[in-house]
Image 1: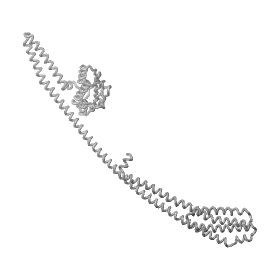
Image 2 (image 1 turned 45 degrees about the horizontal axis):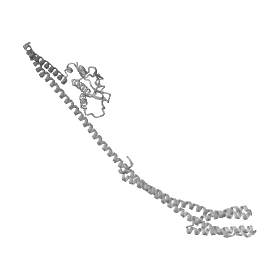
Image 3 (image 1 turned 180 degrees about the horizontal axis):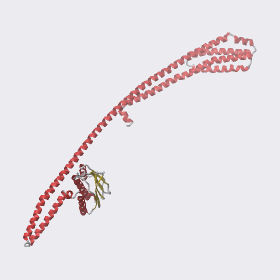
Image 4 (image 1 turned 90 degrees about the horizontal axis):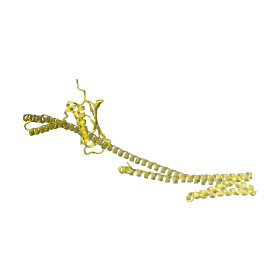
Length: 451
């Protein structure tokens, strides 16, 4: 079953599958792009928070380095101070860029920058005074309350900026949660749609299977009915064939009996009359005697023809001598008339009279077919019993034929088959072009006669 057939049988399911696929892609892409923005904002906000917290830390580092220098008068103490100044400049530059389009946080950052600049200016002034030798003035600058107030203001502004970032983080987290919630709802809805589509497919598949099973059942029922009908018709044909053959043999027996009794009596009586006439004429009428002799010859020929006709209608040898001598006589007469060499391998078997007659007629039909079609030079005829079954084989070395091709003149073989089946036997035919023909008959042997 190809895809086009599936689509034609399940248009609704195919539409649902396409809709579910499109919706899944839409939800996936939409959720991705909706989550990317807040996640990027959260990353930038985390960087901003780090920079804001770093400003206060760097300012404390600068103040610590400055005081260490003032106390020890060692230049290496100014290295942390200088590093803190560069960190403060970098952090302020990044925060300026980060808050470039946010007026309120940018205003807070401006105030923070001014306070930091003022505090750094105070630290730088104390260092300058210390280097100028005005140590008293430098110490007073460090110990003044102005620096403490500036630090408190810086902490307040840093806290305000951190609060802005915290609010931004809360908004971003809310946006991500909302996106995830919508994605869950969408996936749940698509799952329901997919389950509906699956249920529809399973329902249609089950219905189709039931329909196919019902059709198969109907086909099987019709097949069984036809098998029974064919068997019944075959049985009827077999019985009809048997009846026709029985009627035919009965008619032949009647004709043979009538010919033997009535025509035989007439011919014999005529022959006796001719003999009496001849004895009375003596030698007085040579011409009449010649005519009378010719009449006797014609009567003898008629008697011989009557005998041959009777033998063809009902072979008397079959009932007087048995099946084997009858088949030997038939084979010998065929060999004398046709010039075909016949090889016989016949052994006595036990068969019912009807089966013996069937065997005789089958051999007659086979010889007739060999004479008409086979163009054979040798014929093999065998009869024997094996394991309670009688087997007859008639084989020739003629031209043969293809048994798979239909034949217009196959009624003789069909008649043979029906006659064999009527006696509970089985006929098989084997032939091929150039390989001759073999007819085999197997039928049950008759039970031995009671003593």
